[in-house]
Image 1 (cartoon, helix red, strand yellow):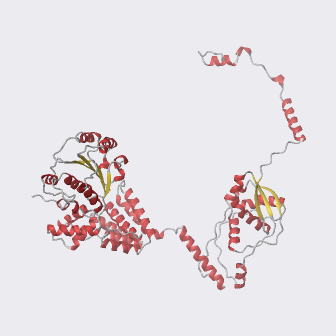
Image 2 (image 1 turned 45 degrees about the vertical axis):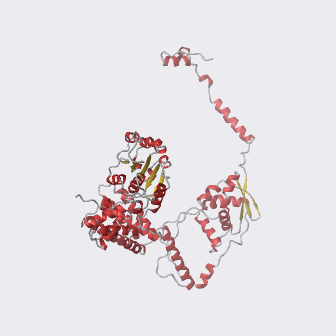
Length: 586
């Protein structure tokens, strides 16, 4: 007798035998028991979770001659024919290969025909593979089938099923089985079939199944056939290499796994699955499909790395798997991804890391100043690059934080020159008395309020170029109106422009106060542009004289008349285009 695989031999025959899908079982059993069976069902879920099995049991109980509490008897002729695959009441169609319009029309032409049983059940597997024309052909019959017809649609990708079909069917979602259910399933099958598989073999089957009952029993078949080897440690070695940032170890583990006959893409998918398990464990999400060994491996990896590292590894390996589809040698993409992940520590520090390093260095310098000594032998941080508006931002920071601000005379500062590249200045020892003196804040006081012409001159010559780019762009249209006490009134062309410049007042006040060594306030008003003054009489006289001189320079006697023989302009155009006719317009 031909051997039957375990997943076929131990396929559930009743609703009660379906494991881990209590919500689906309850919905179908209650519908049958209360005579409320829908005309169409859509069963979706991962592979090997029981979609086709549930549809067959539904067809069996709908045609059973002796149903008991929504369950088939599995003994009548109809049930026996269903299990043998010879019943005329169940029509299974693979929509992946019969997905054209003609295939669907042929099926629908036979829907109204009667069958020996009470209900004719159509099972369309992988319904998301139907073409657009086939889906449209199915719609009307699916919405209003004959009374004796029930449609059951099964798919692993429900999001690809058009909304018009999903809205016409009752959608039931199946889920992956938890580890406890798979362990119970394997133990029952091993005991019933007397397979003699040890605990290690059963644990291997459960891990290989990863939530799928069919995959678990297929893995158990391999164990029975002697195809199980000791669990491959390639993934564990790769995780260890990622945690230790060991490039050589990562590439060595990958090469060892490939030499054992495993495809690079399979290794990449296994590593991606292990990283996902670690990510879920790090986020505190309970995963019912994880075996004890997988959970322990994930927890070990999580304790060695940060969640950000796990996320980065997931993204990098995922991109590598996509690139491997078109690569002539898939190993290269996976090796490059591993190198990027393991050499991460050698790459330049991120902005956040640079900020943390600078903060630490500043703390060391402050501690050294407070102690009256130097900051050790470490190198001082490089000076920040100077640019437009750097001085204004420095003044704002000093005013906000109480930093020292050296006094300057009211004279206009010279145009700033671009400093040449120089080595960073080393910190020098500071005496405690001077350190306390430097740390004491000082305000720009002691100067006199300048007059309006002086403010305008200094603003255009020096201060405007020292503002930030945004302030320089917005305040370039400023017209100084007047000086009221210690307040400078600036005029802007319109109200929207004035409103946008409100946030720049502190920066303008800072540069003005610092330059004139006195506190200066700024107030913005709307002042339309002044129209140009009318030309003076002297200017008009000069313009008229120039015009007369130009006319006098033209000798009218030197001009010659055109020859009348050449004809008018219309005649010359007609000659240039033979066959053209002159049409007089009204």
